[in-house]
Image (cartoon, rainbow, N blue to C red; front, top):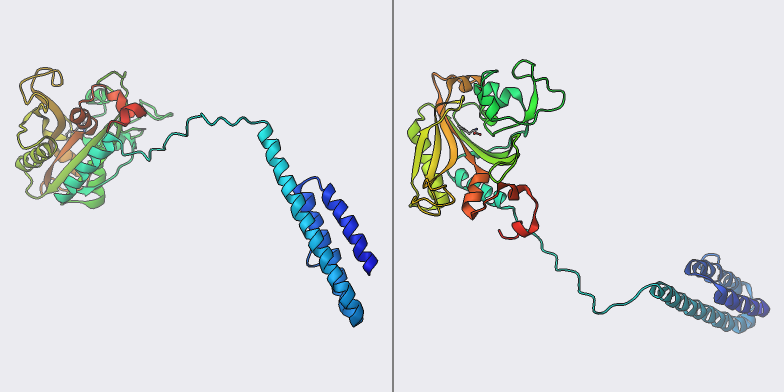
Length: 350
Ligand code: PHE
């Protein structure tokens, strides 16, 4: 028994010293000292069958061997750790003059999101629902349901991206496209909720433009509409005047002039006095003193019909605010393309 222990100690120490890596060392530790089937453990377990005097002699020796082997394992472990670090460090150079990693900015909301959310709050307080609509839209909702005749030139003004496989010669309503405005939601919302109804729809729209400082293929609008049994043009005016004052202050003036949209009758273009020159004329308003910020009008009976609502009973108005436009005017941004550019230097200013 004593001999077994001595042998275990010498052979164990040699093997521990020779362990090439931590995995080999760990396996060795289990083999020698493992609680279940380690060699030393097995010797200790067999002690209980021995006579009391022998136990007295072997016991302390076995413990001693255990401690020696354990500390040898620990020492070898430290050696291996140190050499691993040295190996890794050998290929590296520590440059204490290197600048620290930049402080990570958690970021902030895009100016379009900021102005959009502000207007959502504003309209929610007036009792409007806030709805979301599909960006990939059918020709039917984007044009036909909004009273655009199949061959009406108004479709050309809103050229967009047609989805592959779309046949331009197909009958109206058959194809798919990227919506050119948020107006398709007038009909979708009427079909879903019926009248009376008041809602706004903020969202992305698309146009097939050759882009320049004033034109972009992706733009944002906020659609708004209200339908009930006694809605008049005065409601439209009142609501939009409130929006203009909310955006540009109580001094702002608003004017309407006739403009054709197939889905409203009468249709108007809405302008406000230039926020910069207060109507005197400047670079931003191209010396007119006025800035166009929305299209609007009284909903055409055909649109109400498409929405499943009886135009003899209900009427209402719709407007489309150019959200990208509002943001440009609010911050004096001169190139619309910056909004979609993802340029951090630009975005950090808001
Ligand atoms: N959808 C129109 C556009 O994109 C704007 C509009 C909306 C006009 C609602 C009238 C009523 O130009």
